[in-house]
Amino acid sequence: MAVVLLASCNSKKVATEATTDATAETKTMSMNAKEMIKNGFTMGTIEESKAEGDCPFVIRIEGEDKPYFYDPINLDESFKKHGEKIWFTFNGLRMMNRCERANPVSIVAIQKREE
Image 1 (cartoon, rainbow, N blue to C red):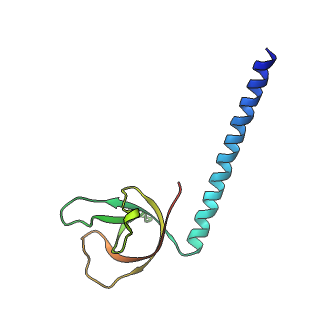
Image 2 (tube, helix red, strand yellow):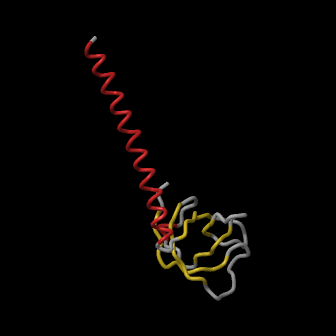
């Protein structure tokens, strides 16, 4: 019976440590987001489209009223995954749009975003 109690207490300790680790990770991610924004990065999500006349990949940005989209002309192959969450910096381009719903941009820096 003592073994069961000991195992039971140890189990609670492990669960508490996991919860504490998850809370710390959430705080770190929140701090990381503030740091990324402070450093000029924008939060986005890669979307793939197979529709005719549409850009094959766009970056979706959640605007205040509705989402808007960028057409990254130099998106690295490793980021061409639907639903990939990213941080990125970019330069706007003065060129014709390649698709109707997104403005062309050149990626300056990009990295995967953990969420």
